[in-house]
Image (tube, rainbow, N blue to C red; front, top):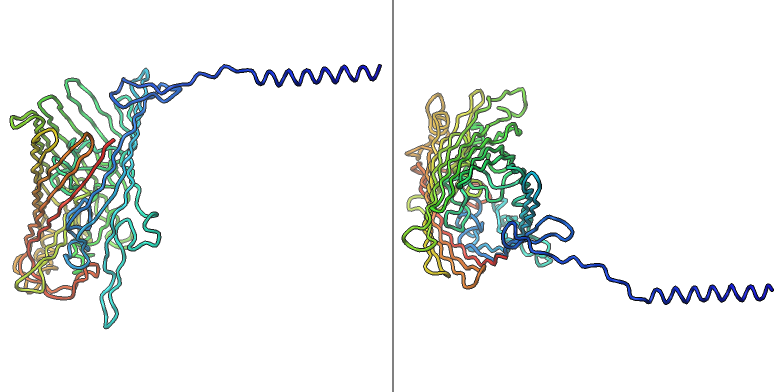
Length: 512
C-alpha cells in the first residue's frame, strides 16, 4: 500500500508540473500599447506625455559660427585682449552651440500650467591674455581666456560650457523663475541683427530670475508688474573713486567696485499693445544702488542707498509698403542710476581700445559708465544715460532678407565725478596732468551694421552680420601711462583719441 500511494502521489505531481508547463506556453493577451498622441491645444509640435494629460514640445537649434575681428563671438573688439589690437587679439573666434528647450503645458480648472526650460551647450575658441611683462630674456607669460584650453591634450572633448537661459513656471497670470525681463522689448537685443552687443536698450536674452504678474485685457493689450533679480545682469557698478589707478583708468574703470549684498529686486512695470499693425510698449524700472562701505571694514561707514530708474518706449511696425513681412523695430531709453537698462549686460559699459597715432606711441580711447560713483564721506552720485536702437528688415523673396540696424548711447557724469577726475571742487583732478588738453568723462557709443540672411530650405539659415562700433570719448591730448599687463602694452605716451571696432559674424543655424 505504501508503494502504491507513493506511485499515485508521484504521478499526480508529474501531471501538475506538466499542466503548469503547458499553461505557461499558452498565448497571453498583450497589454494595450499607449501610443503618443498629438496635442492640438497649444499649437504645432505638442504631444501628450503617455499616461498623462500634460502636453510637451521639444525644440532648439544647432549653430556654427565664426566672428572675425574680435575675441568674443557676441561682442565687439573691446577690452583685454581684443581692444589691444596686437598679437594677443584674435583674428577669429569660433563657436559651436546646441540649444535645447522643453515646453510643457497642462490644462487645469485654474487655467494652463506651463513650464519652460532652455539650455545651451557651447564650445568656443579661447584667446591669450598677458599676465606679465618681459624682463631681460624672460618672455611674458600668458593664460587662456574663454571656455576652452589652448592646445588641450584631449582635443578639447572635455571643454565647453553649459548655459541655463530660461527655467520658469507660468500659472494663473504669474511667471516664476528665469525668463526675459518684462522691461525688454520683444526683440530683446535684436531689432534686426545677430550680434549681441548693441547699446540703446535693455536685453536679458539669457533670462533673469523674476516673480511677475501679467494681466491680459484682450485685443492684444497686456500689462505686467515684476520683481526681478538685480544681482546678475543689472549692476553696472557703484564705484569708490578713491580706488582709482592709472592702469584701471585706461582699462575702462574709474575706481573700485563697492557693490554691497542684495537688498531689493528691481521693480518693473510694463504696458503693451500687440496687434496686426505692430506693437507698442512702455516700460519703467526702479533699481536700488546698495553700497558696502567706504573702506575695508564696516567701521569706515557707508553712503545711503540711492534708487535709480529707467524708462523705455518701443515700437514695431509691420505690413509696411516695401514688401511682405518687412518690419521696422525701434526703441528709446533714459536711465538715471540704472545704466544696464541702456548699456545692457552683453554690451557692457566699460571701454578700452587702442589704435594708431601720429604724435605718440599709440592712441587709446577709454570710458566707463557705472550706476553711481562716490568718495569716502559723500553720498552716491548717479550716472545718467540715454540711447536708442532700431532696424529695418526687408524681405527680397522667401529665401533672402537684409536688415540695416543702428544704435546709440550717451553717458553723462555729475560734478563729483568730473571734479575728481578733471579737477575742481577741492580735487586736484586725477587726469589733470601735463599733456591732457581736454578732460571730460562723458562719452557716446555709436553703432551701425548690416546683416543678410539666406534660408535655402525651411529652418536652415546662413547669415553674415557686419558691425561698426565707434567710441566717441571726450578726452584730448596725450598721457604717459603703464597699461595693465593683460594688453601687453609698454609704458609710453599715448594719444587720447576716439576708437573704432569692425567685426563680421558668419553663422549657420538649423532650427528644429
